[in-house]
Structures are given as structure tokens and as C-alpha cells.
Length: 471
Image 1: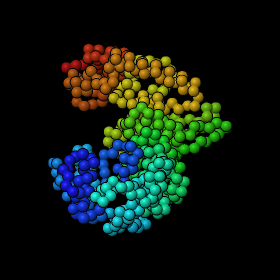
Image 2 (image 1 turned 90 degrees about the horizontal axis):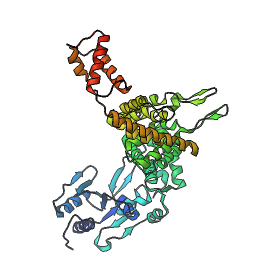
Image 3 (image 1 turned 180 degrees about the vertical axis):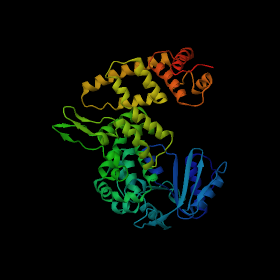
Image 4 (image 1 turned 135 degrees about the horizontal axis):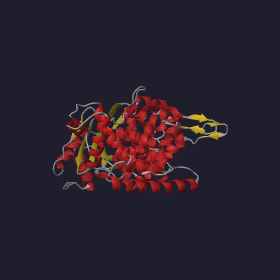
């Protein structure tokens, strides 16, 4: 059976089948590609399992394709991969696995397609499609995965305690698939996650966080985050988030459950933005509340300064979760610090000075900050929400007007520190900072317009007050 191989997806699978026949091995499409195709979801990669040498099969297939894609292989794991246009194809030999109690890395031995399906995490990921000449296109479904797809449930091929004890990351994956697909984890499987939650400690934080970020990227992150909380998994690797949960009552006064409030804020943000880091800002915006919770007679529960504490906690949490300690972390910390500012402006007379300062402090992140703050309005009191949103629209309009007039966003001072040093023949010193701050504060307060001439005039006046004259 000779065919002309091309980059077309279906033709590619035919070519794989032909190459496998010539090598006298069986091969199958397995896992996520099959699941997503049956669900009508877009796919960008495919896994091929063969009853033989996966690396050799990958090389044989690549040799038949236009442009001969480069095959990357990992001899230790017996896997190979190549990229065709924007489509990744990975090959591996069918295998069976056995695990030890202290590791999620299995002992691997060659196996049959049945052995390979048995080691899969969930029935919906154990589906296979034959690429062999005798039964090309046949669905192989030993665990009724099709039925589980139709019923939208997450179930394991083996007993769930075995599945999760063998590889505890599968507990995170169960919750991630439930979140991404809108599926339900059946009670027996969820109870097994609760029983085995401490096993997650043998998994690297990088792998845990990768799954967590996929949950955060779902259309409704709250589904997965709530499952992580109720299963007990969340407490194992992110206890600070769990500390938000619960309501304390004193003298008949209680505060809202800040954990479930946070889930609502994340979902609100998710309806407006796909930005993962804006969603992380939503997750962490109230993270400082447990540390600042106080009961004040007559006033009830307060959380004064929680935004400052939250900003300080952000780098530690990012380090703990092995999230990037770069501009992404600084962005999240900044939004956490500023998240109360726009809301506070709805409760007072709005001055141009307050608007300028918010624009200056938020800079390029002002639009994201406004999304976060609007999403933070979660009251069940519809009248209160309506009033807040109306006031919030006024704030947004005033910000737009002030920005158009004063150009404070991404503001650069009309006179730089280097220029101040040149004008007064100064070395880097406290005086330079004092003069630079004076110019900035005058512009933000509206004392002078945001231009060079006004700034220079004020600079000379302020310099005289500290006995400095231009050279």
C-alpha cells in the first residue's frame, strides 16, 4: 500500500500506518487527541503508540514527509517527536508500568496496546484508534471511555487509589480536566483524591503549578479551584489560599467568606480577560486579609492594610509555587497593592489630583487594574452593586478625561535627574531627589501643568529654598 505523504493530518496518519506495516509493528492514535476529536475540540498534537520501537517509527515516518522534519528523540524514555507545520506528533512504544511508593517515576517494560491503555490516567484518555491496515480507524475502548465522554464524567481505568498512589499528579489532572471540560469527577474517584491528597508531596512543584495554571486558564477557574479546596489538595501546596476560607462571627457580626469571594472575582475577571497573570492578581488580591483581620467594637471586622501585606506576600508565594520571579510577579504584586484605589475613589469627591496619582501609580497597568476592581464587586445586594458600578463608570470616565488632558499614564518627568544634576552641577545626592520629587508632586497635584517650561520655573524656585543656584 503506497501513498504519497503530505502534511495533511489524515494523510499523515495513513503514512504512519504504512510505515508501521513495513516495520511489522502495530500502531495506534491514543489519549488526548482521540478524546478532543470526539469532543469536537481543537487539537495541536497527537500521540502515537506502537508495539515496537517508537523512535525508529518516528524516523521512518519523517523520512517519507515533505521537508523531512527533524526528529527529536529521548532514548532513555523511548520517545520521539517531530513538528509538522503547527502540529506536534509524539511516538512511543507500548509499555506496562510498575511504581514504587516514594516516586511517580515507574519501572517500564515493553507491553501491548492493552497494557498501555491500562496505565492511562482516566477512561476518557484511554481511547485508541487503530492506524493498522487490517482495522484502520477502529476505536479501541476497553474501559467504556466513550460512555464516560457522553456522560461527562471522570473515572479511572484501575481502582482510583491505585491510579493516584502510583502517580499523584493524576489527582491534579482529574481536577484540571473537570475544570476544562465541565465534567464531573465521580464520587468514588473524588473520595480517593481526598484519601491520597498527601501523596502530592512527592510531585515536583513545577508539575503541580503547571496543572494549577491550566485550571486558572479555564473559562471558569472557580470550578477547579473549589475542587482543589474540597479535596484537600490545595492545603498541601498552597495553604495561604486556604486560610481565606471560612466565616468568623463575633457579637453577631460576620465577615464574608473571602475564599469564595476570591473565586467569584477570578471568574469575573475570566469573563473579561484571558490574561493568566491578571487572573493571578485576582487570586491574590485579598491574600493579606487573614493576617490583617481584626474585630473592632462598633465597626465589626476590618482588614486594614491587607493590600500592603498582600503585595509583600506575592513574591514569597511566587517563589513557593515556582512561578516566574520576573516582571510577571511584579505586575501581580502591583495590582494587589493598588486594587482598593479605584473603588475608594467612588466613595469620595473625585479630584483631578487623585486621578493623576492613580494614573501615575498604575501606569501601563491601569486598564487591567480597572478590570480587577470592577470584578471585585461581588455583593449579593443588587442595589449596592448597581450603585457601585454606576460610580465606577464615573471614575473610568474621569480617568479618561484627566489622561487625555495631562498625559500622566506612562509619565516621564519633564526634567530628569540627570538634567537636574547638570543644571546645578550636582553629583548624585539627596538634593537631586528632593528637587525631582518636588516637580513630580507639583504636576500630580495640579499646581503646574505637565510641561518643561512650568517644571523648570518651579525647579528654580525650589532650588533657591535649599540654597542652590543654576550654574
